[in-house]
Length: 253
Image (tube, rainbow, N blue to C red; front, side, top):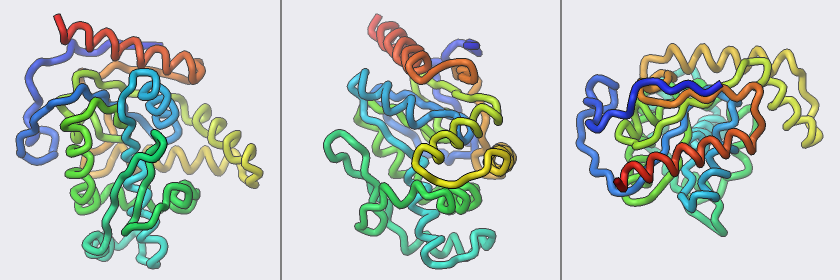
């Protein structure tokens, strides 16, 4: 299922309406924003599409996971928003590209592998709702997109981080489908896991992401909806690349 929503608007949406601040952004690269719930395959699709298009892939979720790892390592209660906000002052998250792959650094340490742990994801799901955490990473994300052709995925890219993006996509799938994908991924790595527990965890993440006060997960009004429950990775990637080429071609007319 692919659904076109409203036609792309040429004007930027006022940032104050989206709760994202009022600063003006200068757009110099072609940006593709991919939003959607946890486990929808955003990172996999974005990475593959970026390679095919020759774009820079920016995994914003990895940046938030680095923050989550810092909170976990320092045994800061994830539910204590004030303590988490204070801890943000001691965190420096940076991105580097090595052999074409994004590497995430936390205070100078490459944590690209460690941030993928399940417990890091659970902490991240909670703290990513806090305004101070989002504010910490927003500037870095926008800077990466200003002068490069990028594909950026996350929960609020099209609605907040890059409201000016010429192409916005909302990638989703049913909770059961996403849980099955995660289960297969973990079992292939030899990890012991429970499908029903994963399903409950994904549903809980959806609830938190969609109802948080700061930049909740939602489909941008001018985004293309991609429901991928019945589609494979290659099919979805092909659709994303096709939409990108179409928008770039229209932009040159």
